[in-house]
Length: 292
Image (cartoon, rainbow, N blue to C red; front, side):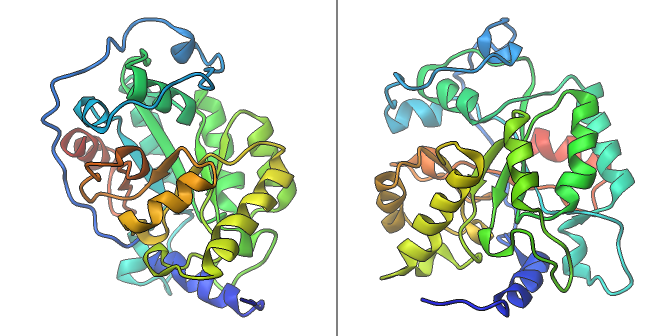
């Protein structure tokens, strides 16, 4: 399968509709919650050794209280050309800063995939009010705006990279360079795979597995010097048939949006909610409480 630079036009348009699986609330009726206020390696930022962790059964994982996970795309001020739908995926700069301040003032502590993996499988303690911040699609503003904002709060995040756009200037948005992606990784953030050009995961067949998973994984591992173990589904869309392909390639967790988690493979259908550009910090706070 061959791609040309014209793919970037599609990628740019996708940014206004990317991950458009509409958020639905899966209220947690979970009763099993780890003692999250205990100070442990997971809550002090010390790397968590997950190499010896045995994957728990699905029932055990599903019984644990879900950790709130937010999904962001563009962080920039709205333009007159931005449509109604597009604005849902574009959080204006001051609003984003206010949202992050709200999280910090509310006592939320960011966690990373190693901590989430250890918690879901073993019940390992997390910091009080854990939350995960994720950013999709490689947008440059995630480096120029998001990174310094999070740094001031001592927050870390997960960046899901769409490799077709690395270092490019798009019609609607510019993208991060290889050097910027490596810097994010070196500074303690986590880089994850978000395919080559955002093709719908549910439609993969034949060479798609190589083009959308193998090649992007290799490229990101070359950039960061680290193994790719996290994956985010384009549009949040997934199917059970494709999960074995992710496992076969060494992925240990995959992130969708707000549909119900798979009863057999909850680690590969971890829920996120899109932080809408229309939401105030208060609305975001309420959405976190109501969705997880």
